[in-house]
Image (tube, rainbow, N blue to C red; front, side):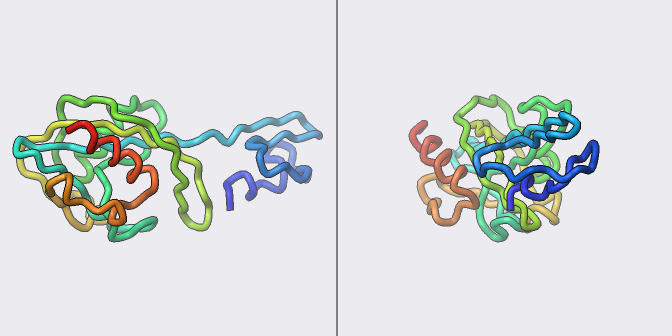
Length: 173
C-alpha cells in the first residue's frame, strides 16, 4: 500500500476524502482546502573504495532485503545535506568517514516497510576510505564485506536502484 492510500480522512478537518486517481500523489480536501503532497523521500549511499581497489559493502541486518548487500547509506534526515547524511550513515554503520565524495547518479526506488511502499530517490556517490571498518549498528548491518567490485553478483544487491547504480559504478573503472 502507498502511504497516500492510508489517508481516508482529511488530517485537518477529518472529513472523508474522495477516491483518488492512482496517479495522483497528493491529498486535496474539498471541504477545507487542505493539500498535502507525497513527494519521494531522499536517501544516500556510496560505493567506497580502499587503496587496493576493493569496494565496501554491508550485509543488511533488517528488512527490506535482509541478508542482501548494499553500500553504506540511508535516509536523509530533515535539515541535513546529502553529503552530511552520507557521512553520518557511514559513521553509524561502519565507523569510518569516506573522503573524496563524488556524485555518481540518482535512481528511483520503492522501499517497502511495514506494508507501506515508499517512493524514494536514492543518490549514489563514489568515495575513498582508509582504516579499519566494522559493524557499528548491528540492527542495520550484519557484516562488512570488502570485495573486488567485479566479483559482486547483481542478484546479491538489495535493491533495483542499487543494481542500476552499481552498473554505472563499474563503468567508472
